[in-house]
Amino acid sequence: MIVDIHNHILPGLDDGAEDIQKAIQMGMQAVENGITHIIATPHHRNGEYVCHPEQINEGIAILNFLFDRQDIPLTVLPGMEVHLYGSLADDMASTGGIVTLGESMKYVLVELPYSHVPHFTGDIFYQMQLKGFIPVIAHPERNAEIKKRPNILVELIQKGALAQITAASIAGLFGKESQKLSIKLLKHNLVHFIASDAHNVTNRSFQLLSAYKYIEKHFSSEYTDYLIENASNVVKGKEFCIMAPQKFERKSKIFTFGANR
Image (cartoon, rainbow, N blue to C red; front, side):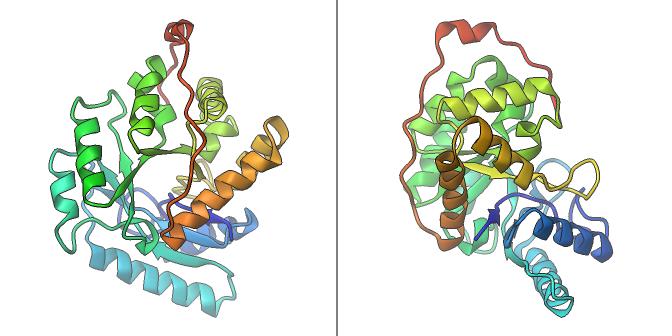
């Protein structure tokens, strides 16, 4: 089972697939990357898009029907990429609002602002965990404050959050600086998932296979297996043990990276 926990394949809900045909093309490309299960994660409450569970479920039902009819061996599961906001933890307790990853009733993909890490992030994550949910931080390698002070991510992970790096960042498609930071996060045991964050089949495409091959070559096959198994555990709704996060030494404060989106 190869699971992609973050992508924008559902047509018409955000800035991902424009229509059904584009979504089908994305599905075919996902299969070419060895992916068997996709958790569709449209943007939610990011200032531009608001998604409702019924929209997500309807889109998933249509895609699964079409993939089955066209013999595309891919299963689509529900999720969303929730932009961090003040009442997120409270909304987790309400029904019909926030969609967990893969119907896990546990893992929640959370997007931080690109410019900073809000001062209330740790508190919201703590409140989420008290309610039984595990926050998964989407693409921290693209957050400007984490780029300058990566120990912020260490602290969030030490307190129970998990982190997902974008495959294209590791493959170098978002520039050398994002690739360098992604590698540093991998070296410091701060990465728990690799996901595509695919929006289309061109400039924001599925690159999961390239990322896994890079990690296997420059780290180990065991590290790749660890990341693959973690994503599989999300679909199964299982918790898992993580490698102990390692803090950055003081000298890493001199790193300044350009923003990538």
